Length: 159
Image 1 (cartoon, helix red, strand yellow):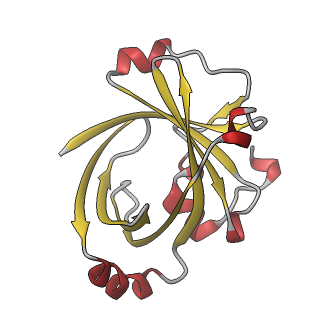
Image 2 (cartoon, helix red, strand yellow):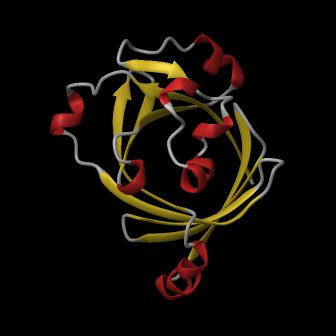
């Protein structure tokens, strides 16, 4: 079981590096999403199939990943209907950190989010986002992938 320490931001503008970066297509669907922040999802990324359980909200979350076969993934996929996210992820270097920029597709097209994972809460607190990062949404549940999958992009008036 791993603890994920991560900050999430809207993207103000795409950084130049995205133009030359190779993104990875991701499709994920949610089987269970509870009000307490617990979620059970399945994901296909770069030929790998995973079941992930996440618990908690905000900066620190517990994450458990279990490998699935493609056949298992395909059996579960229909059960995620109406609770899916499709995106392309770009990994960009930020000195000691890696930014994972997600460019959403489908019903979420136009949404850009960036996440940075940290080795400690202290490291997350001293991080200074580059100017292409926008508003921080780490503690805004509306920007959790499972919320986006069900409810779509929050309205402009909500940002």
